[in-house]
Length: 294
Ligand SMILES: [Zn+2]
Image (cartoon, rainbow, N blue to C red; front, side):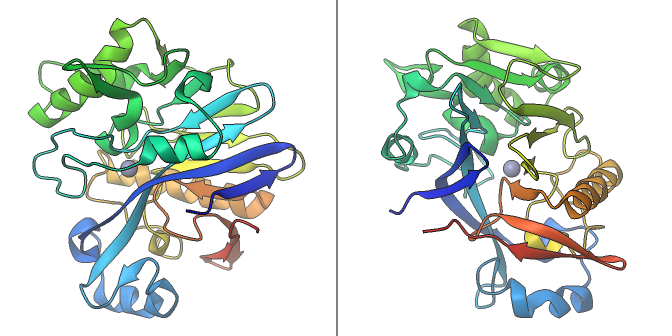
């Protein structure tokens, strides 16, 4: 498998792919779905981001590896292997070579300095832990795992859903028990070149990460958007958003920021080519794809 690298200033950004989720229709994933509006985007959306034959949208699940020269930082850790996720067949009991792909990119688990968990959904914290001798233990023994304090407490609150508690117990709690979790409220200044920017809506504590790497930099947009159709149709939040109205506002702010600054947008779920510049044309946003060179 070819390693996909983007050189952004003197920072190297690498995509570590896990899987492609193909189980969702746009009609069910976007509560504001409109047949005509969706159909108008299909000429550029298919086949990479939408499969006409099955009428399913395509969502990549991947991590971003950031090498600044000073630190090696992993942004989100996908679904993980052997984790029961009832009701989510795309994420359930996976068996993927994600860890081998990380190693193929030239990084061992011991070399990760920081794991950034943009939020605590199951497809962002899975490789936080691996199973060893029947126990879930941190995959990255020398890393700090940075996550929102607000989300952390929501996931383990007595009123949290059984699913959230399951994710918490196999993927987040072991990191906390190992003393490696850093719960943040007002940003985090321990990551070289990366600034935590609140991006609430998808979850209350959801954040994006802005990379300072010279003139234009990059934005790791996490789940402010899921599928590229949400660039022109930015009003469409996902059914998985805790607060769809706030999520829409966050998405508009993100797209406006990217369009104004020319920064490279690197979301958590866009299928290939994965990365793009955002252009504003009147009231509409469009993508100018930037595939990994080479
Ligand atoms: Zn996600």
